[in-house]
Image 1 (spheres, rainbow, N blue to C red):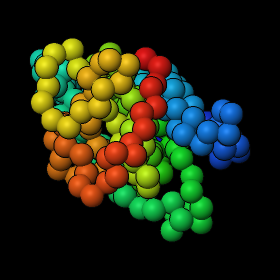
Image 2: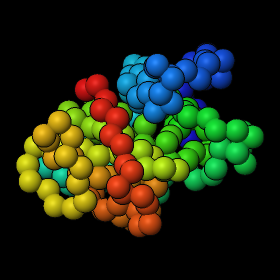
Image 3: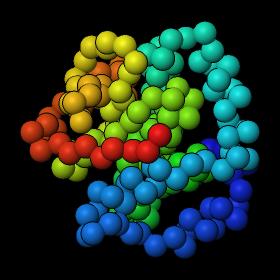
Image 4: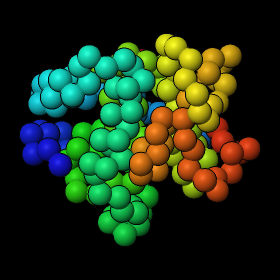
Length: 182
């Protein structure tokens, strides 16, 4: 939890209406994920994260960021905390004491794009949201081919899972990709 997230931003996000494009609820997550962190937040966390990943190749850096998001935030279901489903903008995940799979995926996707300049997609499995990263070299593991490009699954909720590991027992055949802006 980072107290330096501007309170006015958190108050704004609290009033932000849930929305989607053309009645497609999955576009909601893309809107949240495509919203950049404000500069004050970047100034607070990015120097430490860059130092943390400095000297690592992009796969190693992604592994470190994935582990950070997997273990650095307390998981809790939205229904228990908020009484309903609620997706977070990246800053909200940094601010609030609890988050779930969509919140972690949104934050992780933002970190990968900002710090490693890699393309990212959110992967929706019925009942679960994960992330997939298009690395600049061959990486093994569970993949999705999106637009002819190989994206490697990175699940920020699957504690201890490395880059390339999908959570077991998901409906893989029903997974849908949500491409994010770089």
